[in-house]
Length: 572
Image (cartoon, rainbow, N blue to C red; front, side):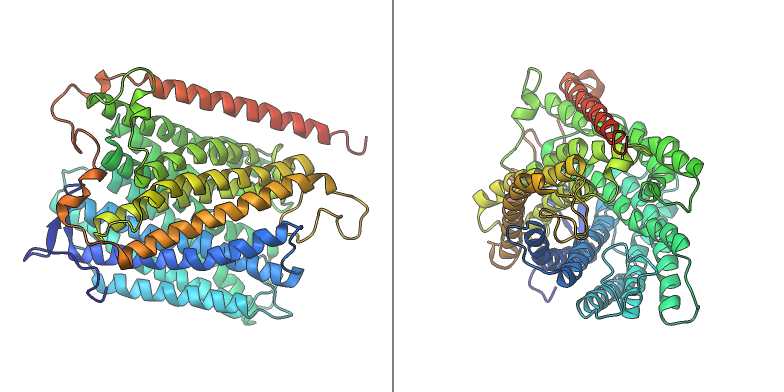
């Protein structure tokens, strides 16, 4: 880190974090900072294209033509859905592994090599997309064959995935050494969740290497043709698997930050661990919902993967949806913080951007991303979602309102506890999660509405006037597009505000001393003194919240079936 952000370490290279109480080695801190900063650079670059893409889909502005739109959309997708996420997830592995376990980061040279390889792959992908010219096509995120893309793009994707594999090896080595030295010990829940994240990441990376390697061989003419249906199935191992890494890493962040800054306790480690194991077996099967309209796979295969198997992953998510808020409620009640039904929640540190970002991520992911994911993953309901802007709304609800908002909270935490810098403006830092999450929620809902109610297609530049080559008009969707455009601008402004606070605080924030971070810990301290076991405290507030969630799910489910029934009249 060029000596700019070093902290004071003991002779053994460790220091004690005044917030978590963990013993953190210099090597761990160095690479968490490095990967997190690189992730923020990818967020900044991809965010530029968020503006150009949104201002193109908002046809009142109509910023780009079709050719440029696809290039900008590809750059937006790869930098925000892949590079921002995976660089941050490597940092999370290092937090969940060596940091939580109080160990030195092993294989430092591999961490350095992995980072450099990932950066090289990301640069190659960006260059290949930016310089795309006919007959090559901008690859978007799906890069579907037989539409050809620059061979350099496939090569860059392979290099990046190899780099991610190398970067993850020090994390797995940490767990190996930990278990060898403590064979009878149990990994902390956060470390266990990070371990499951790592395994899912390996599954996704292997699928990506096979898919992109297959396409790369085709593009450099090592093989004469490519099976498009086979490629689609191979691609979605990484295409959706990478988003499952986001999901599980996000939940690890939820457990970690609600404990550290919210005073949460683990209600049942066995149940939470079981939920992570269910992800291990079922979460990647949900990728099949991308192939529900694909004629190359059987109906039985689709139904099994998107119904029976996918329910295992949904059940795991429901466990976490109860366990995390229940842990907050029980932990805060144990500290005597708030009575009544929701006093434990209203008394929480809502001005702390670490806490508010985490809670907004939990709520918005559950109500907007989780519910819609189950709906669009059904064989019948998928017909009203497939290839419409509602799909785009869904993954903005999951990857943006869920994962990105959680990672923003983690970034604030890293700035305060690892970079040891004060925010350049505590007030703006407190406001930013509300501003960003609120604006992005409205923009996301508009994407869902125009997709479900009007069938507006995704990846199409102009639709409000008409669909080229037809007399079919979608002009009725124009008011919703106007709302989308306005709130997309506000959300982008909220993202810019985050970047200004994050980068400005790291570069210009006041240097903090170990005792200056006491405001991050929950009232009553990180560990409540004495008290009864956590199960003796009420969790009725969480139960009521879960009933509200269930009601929202039932209403949305019934409404989507009603909207599907309206399609049956077409052609009658």
